[in-house]
Amino acid sequence: MCINTNEKIKEEKQMKGKILMVIAPKDFRDEELFEPMNIFENHGYKVDVASTRKGECVGMLGHKIYVNLTIDEVNPNDYVALVIPGGIGSKEYLWNNKKLLELVREFYEENKTVAAICLSPVVLAEAGILKGKKATVFPDKEAIEELKKYGAIYVDKGVVRDGKIVTAKSPEYARLFGLEVLKTIEQQ
Image 1 (cartoon, rainbow, N blue to C red):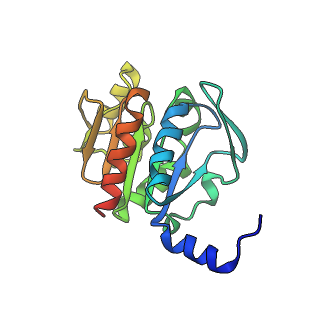
Image 2: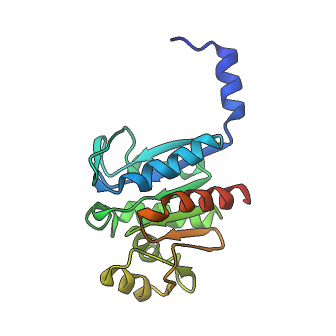
């Protein structure tokens, strides 16, 4: 199918902006990627998914997504928000990822929405943006300790918003997380 230029221009005008979602290449939490992604796309945002490497990424529940953008290739100026789904792969591939920590800080310093769910709020803590901020994380002892170690005020709630930072604790909150991120973006 070929899209003519007028349709493409019309399509781009309708797009409200682009949202970057960063996942682990293996064992990201499926619904924490796909549920918010659907919410964003249904509200006029284009979603780009990046990871630590290009190619097929596989979620904990077996869903697959092909990623053609690495964290190293991301230009924060192209996006209105950064969203980091969790899953057990987050600890292995995203925690302590220097480039991702740098991206988190850049988005935050540009006053853009930064969000993470499940085990991924630890990335926000490590980036230094949760100091003195309320946040939640998957109820795992190590993850909670990491948040506190970096100065976050841990709150045991499903979804927590503090300014332009949104965190959520588990896959059960993926839909509410996506809606809260959307609300935060649209208030920018």
